[in-house]
Image (cartoon, rainbow, N blue to C red; front, side):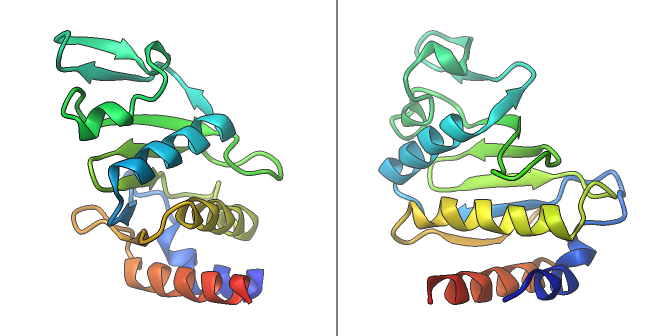
Length: 168
């Protein structure tokens, strides 16, 4: 699948900026997969702003770097789900920020629609998401039921085709 095909199939998911934050989800993840993906993401991205989580045992907010793997605390019930905004997630140049939210069995990826998303950035997002899903055994990317992109089904179908063709 070439870059033009990806862009044509998904460009409606990225513009114009309507103020929303469409969300994609990687679902069906085990606690160990959540932990592995979290560590991979943290090595790869630059976090923008303050990133923290609610520590249920201490009943206080703590910075993500206060513990070796904040995502591991979610499955054990020691922390609430958390979200942070990241940049530098692509290996080839500047990209728009994305949000990452870690749940017990899923990871949410949100973004602001608008002109920052061109064919180049969308194709870099596909590569990033594909690498992320490849860290799992049964992870499946799809649109959020509550806040998915306007063409979420087309995005998911294009992503699955991209992954199949990339694996060949």
